[in-house]
Image 1 (cartoon, protein in one colour):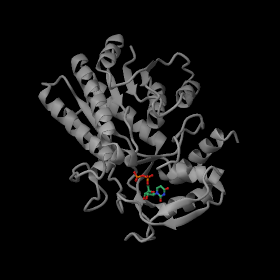
Image 2 (cartoon, protein in one colour):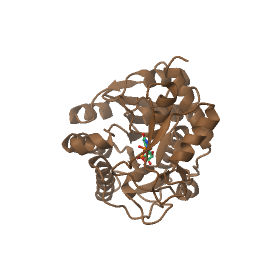
Image 3 (cartoon, protein in one colour):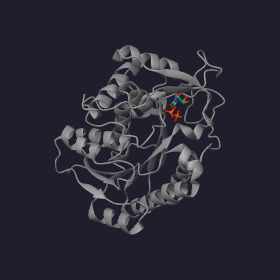
Length: 341
Ligand code: UDP
């Protein structure tokens, strides 16, 4: 019988792409979401891409312990991937309690249920846990730094919660932490992609919305950083590549190939790209002119961070395969799809 994976936040940007890859790899998937930060577009898109009209959807809030217990009682869940969380850095600074309450409570409920039922846990962590690293690229052994926002801190705290609970569980709980770098792009079908509410915080949705005419001008935050062209360096990882990393991680867990009860992997390309390089690549590959200007630095941005992704390759056999150009083409196709063009 096929193994079943529960994807909390499965209707969101990353969750929907992961759901597609899991189904294509032969897993049964249960999507759970409360649609607090997305609509049904991506859930419908996933059904279309996979031909799974019967894809189970549970509309629920992971902060409700009874609802989470009931969910784990209803399905036999071999592994759970937890995405259901708030993710706006700026909002988390203004409303820390909302972020700590939501992001920690939901994860605690998932862990309690996973421990009870012997389900493997995959947690969506972030390169934000490295802060401004002393040297780049960062490996999984690079020391974490204090987070610069409550959002980032919830990632660090959830990592610790998983590690501590695994350690104390006597083998009942096992999990993998994936630290994402900068996920961008969209599914090549252009049926699912990023759907930011309001003004996008992230670079690529801002670029595509500017190119389509929804925003007047892109501000590049800072061109006086100590980098080759003065703009920040990041590791932009294609969303489909990133989604596939989850399949490799779930395979590793359910096939009994974990070497430790709690493992950590960077999910990045190993390739630093500056903001200006990304903007230029977008213009070139899509044949569009982008209206942009240089603006002051944005508070909290680190100068440069990119992954050493070699552990994920040597241990799980995963590595990123798509070029920045392919990814930016997919992001543009998605924006045009949304605009009905
Ligand atoms: N950025 C920018 N203009 C924007 C949004 C982002 O210049 O409108 C820059 C930001 O300063 C950073 C990079 O793009 O250097 C990536 O930012 P994003 O918010 O996408 O991800 P982060 O690395 O902050 O998680």
